[in-house]
Figure 1 (cartoon, one colour):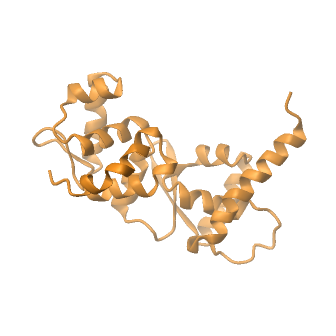
Figure 2 (cartoon, rainbow, N blue to C red; figure 1 turned 60 degrees about the horizontal axis):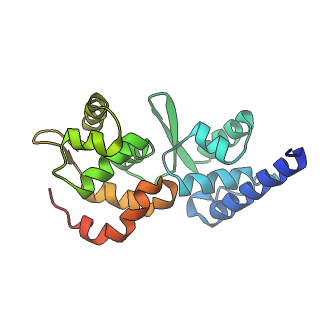
Length: 201
């Protein structure tokens, strides 16, 4: 049985770990908060390490209450430490001033497992077909078609002649830079980065 003290200590350790990232980040220097809480720096550090994260993921990973997370995020946005954008049912958070609009959109889609899987597979195998994508990702062909349409509308995918990532080097750079914050499907990309960065569809 987990005791309340153990939960509190686990939360404190998590906040301290991300607060160290926040304190070291140039995007997290928002001045003296007058508070002993590690939460603001932890949130800034988490967003810096996981750009494009959505509210529920951030709140749960940092073990914060909903009101506590909302309070600090609102303040960090007012202090221009983080910025956010609506993405369907989600609100996604980024370090302020760090990413272009295209990069923010790309990071939002890279936080979705199926969309990320499609982009990763297309970077590795630019000639892959929709049927092969469905098999590779263990999803239905209509699911691939729906995600492909969304990715095309977002400017991440061209469907003129098969499927092609529109800015492959930018997408790959984001994947590699933040590989630790994505799933296992991205970890293996690090060793392939040199050859994939020269990929020219």
